[in-house]
Every structure is written in structure tokens, then in C-alpha cells.
Length: 271
Image (tube, rainbow, N blue to C red):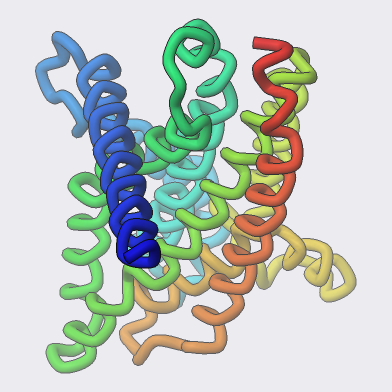
């Protein structure tokens, strides 16, 4: 009987958590695009414009690394920008999610983690109806008929790793921000470093072999390489790259979750 009650209580808590995340994520999307004509599809404009600029500025120099094709270079740049745009947007918004809802937490007893999680969920929804369809369309055109089906099904695999990385960094930064209010300025520098060490507008092949191991320490690097391989190579998914991206996601998520739970008991003293 006691075990049955505990199981019911646990399932009720999970359902309540799911409801809270759903409500907060929906609120986040509505507030973000209130009064907007295109709504959530505005999120596509930034990476598309940046892709065009990269193509104009760097395309002639770097297209030789993409079978001398400007089109392939543009698609490679867009794929990398899709990753970095999701990461930057979701983690920057998650950073202030607890401090920004401090007054609410002081009035209502809520699981603190719902705030960064709801931000990631909102951005994941945005990714799924914006970037994801475009990546699927590109895969259909690049891959042969049979392998395109397999590759389309494989696209979510590196994206799940990206979500794990973003969630872990969201937990880490929102927890630290409660204690260090200068963190947003420092985190902008971290985002810049991650972007410059990610092979987005430049091919990894141009780097000195001695530098590349440092580049591979970037957790976004295997995600970008895996997604590009699936979408643009026209070959079957490279599961070694997928596993590397998942390892990055699991490590960053674990670090973020551990730090978040370690600092959580001290949050209310500073909010």
C-alpha cells in the first residue's frame, strides 16, 4: 500500500513538473513574439543572413574545401550556424531565468529547475519547426533516395546532444548568476570563444594539425561535424561522430546538473 502511494505521488510530481514546464515554455514563446507578423519564424532570419554574409565574404576563399562549390560552402555554414544560434540563444536566455523569476519563487513554492528547462524547451520547439525542416529538405536534395530516409531519421541524434549541452550550460550559468551578477558579461566572451573555435565559416581542414586537438575540446565541435556529415555528405551517418557528440552532451549536462543541485539550497538567500 505504501509503495503504491509512493508511486502515485512520484507520478503526480512528474506530471506537475511537466505541466509547469509546458506553461512556462508557452508563455516564453508568446511573450517573445507578441505582436510579431512572422512570429517564431523570425528565428530563421539571423542564421540565414549570417550565412549569406559568410558566403559573400569567405565563400571564394573556402569553397575549394567543399569540392569547389559555393553552394556546398553555404550549406556547411548554415548547418554550423544552426547549431551555434540555438546554443547561444537558449543558454543566454536560461542564464537569467532564475534571477528574473526571483520574486515569483519567493511567493510560490516551485521546483527551481523548471525555469531554465522551460527556456530550453521553448527554444527546442522553435528549432523543431524552424531549422529542422530546412535541414531535412537539404538532406533530401543532397542524399540519394535510399540513404536520405536514414539520414533524415538520424538528424535528431546530434541535435539531442546539442540540447543536452545547452541544458547543462543553462543549469550551470543560471545557478552561478545567482551569486555572480557580472556573469552575463563574462559569458558573452565564452560564447564568442566557442563560436570562433567552432568550424562554422571556416573548414577545420585549414587549421594546423597541432591546433586541432584544442579545437576538439569545444563541446559544439562534434555536434557540428556530426550534423554536417549527416545532412551534407550524402553518405550513411557516421556513428562515431554521433557518439562523440553524445559524450559531449552527457558530460556538460552532468556537470551543469551537479553544480546546479549543489548551489540550489543557497538560492533563496540571494533572490
